[in-house]
Image 1 (cartoon, rainbow, N blue to C red):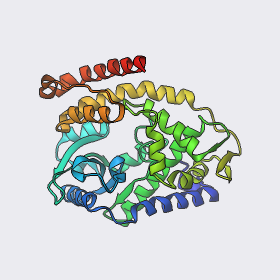
Image 2: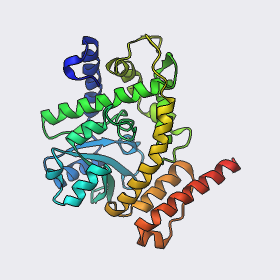
Image 3: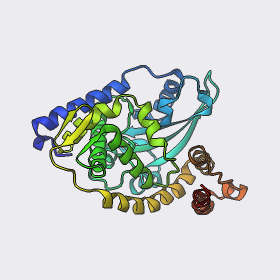
Image 4: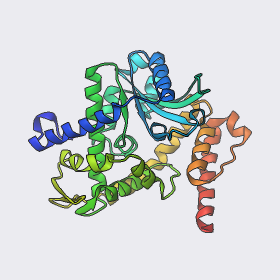
Length: 325
């Protein structure tokens, strides 16, 4: 958002509120399986912080932890501190993030995770208004737990997450008019962000996430809009902007066009770092949309060559499902 020296008192207060909400998410103890994974990743990447987000962060108590793939980001001081390989550093800078598969034994069985890697400087940029595509700031507008190595890193991560919420809410506000509920804004924003990526989310996914997040959307939306420079009032759960937000529909269409290419590039790159990545993607698509890609043995043996064919097959099968609906 605006630089610290140019923020109004209202924006400073809004940032403080957002950081408080972010801090509250991180405060309760983790479930034991999640803590085991956090500790294992912190040991693997000494000196780095760990962000816990996504569906794994909201696993129901009755779910078998060994059947879940948890999502993490590992945030380091620099790419030099994170990698010895020059190629890995370059790949992370050019097409962020690098994604890895990780598993560790536990009393609950083998625990599995995928984790992405970024430096703190890069994360701050990607989670801010400096980055056009929504891939990062739409993800981190959602509740995220910080497991940090220092107060300084914690403060930087809290502010980066607050920026994500503000950027997301500002771009979502351009889709919903001048008056709206927090739920209406988040449904519009999450729906637009799914279309901006190669993500097979059905129409109920956003609503389920919002319900699962409890008071998160109601608590952060108005201060996020204020922090983004959109003055507003709240009455009876309805947020009214002092002036209607700029129309962002064109921007979201452009993100969808850009996102198709970015998704394929990340898929191709991920097959080189993420063991079993092509099967994981097929599993996630099937879980969310019911489309079964039926990955072939050849595609598993040659994931870099097989990924484009699998992506095209998904589009074709998805189209058939829509016609049959």
